[in-house]
Length: 372
Image (cartoon, rainbow, N blue to C red; front, side, top):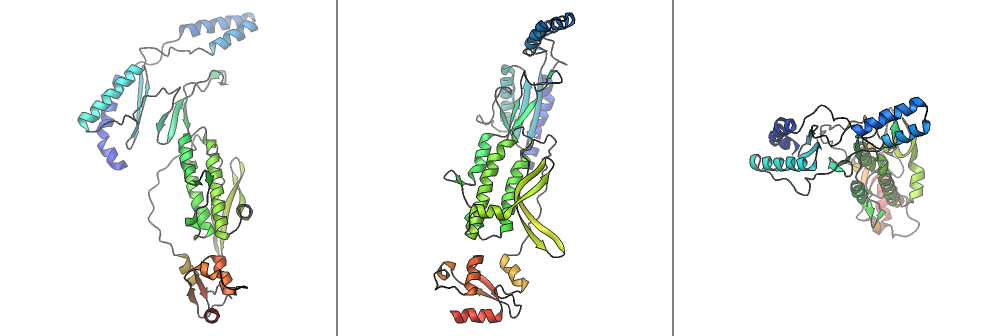
């Protein structure tokens, strides 16, 4: 789909870059604001005379005025950005001209490309008072007369990226049930390492995409929801409690801004590097230089099923013997849990593992069938 969009919309790119942008871009800079400069020179005179009270008064008035004329008819700017079929145009000028640009785009798409603009998605928004949506971000232009850096209003006119609240709520809803974080029963059959790895990969992908946002800290709620869902999933699998799972897998990881709490499962391998699955541990702080890289899809990795790995290990899961390995199967664990007490060792192992297949040696397999 992105490739087809790039091929088909190349004519739209050419139209905007060769026709619209040159037509709606003019002027080198905005003309000066006369009122601003009159106040500026008056403030300089008061400062030279030593009248500090009047100097501070004029400086406060000066910081409420633009230094250039925002309504300058000789200054226009049009910028264009497209990713697949998602487009964004930034325009400095009156709303009437913005509506004219929109109408010309609609006509070009209809006449040349046989496409129609979506009225619900094609919007004209004021960048300072509203937010434009592009590629999952909210884009605004900052304005503050009180934020002073090095004697200047440093944030005025600076683009700001934000995480949309509806996006956060949509992500959280995947792990909620009746408004509360819930377990994922579809993962009960997976090893703990795979459960933590799946939650960690999903959370890491969302956070790393929004690290460019100035309010990435809003993902704190998503972190809490996913963390609680993870611990409930582990607790449900082991028939334990959330606090017990938290104590078992809680860890700390060192980050550039200090240590962070995370949950991780480490699988030791003799003579090889340990396998580590981790959830969390990512500082929710803006990274201005963060890069979003579209990596090529890797080929599908066919992994062995857990039963195959257990069978290839060649070890009896009851006594640890390696003689005459076989696999014992049962139809339902629920039927086994209702047997007489005390439970035999082989049945205790199956219930603890929550598996309907048990790798056993020849002697243990014979005892299982003899026990009936």
